[in-house]
Image 1 (cartoon, rainbow, N blue to C red):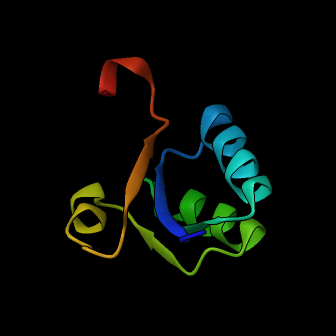
Image 2: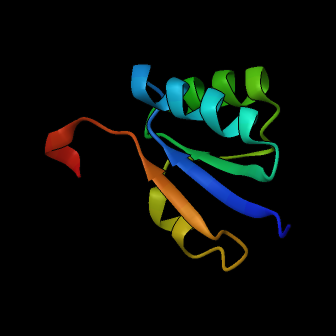
Length: 78
């Protein structure tokens, strides 16, 4: 099975739930976490073993190696 590289935008409750779910899949790599409050992104990245964090989601979208993103921000920001 081909591995999928994904990113998660948002570090709140839903972001954490998605990160945990992704980790359990076994064939999806979490490539990046996007969060305007970079300290929160760095903390969650350390907890889940994610190498890349960005405060600006657009920088993650520019990464051609990422196959999918999880938008886990509050609804009004979708």
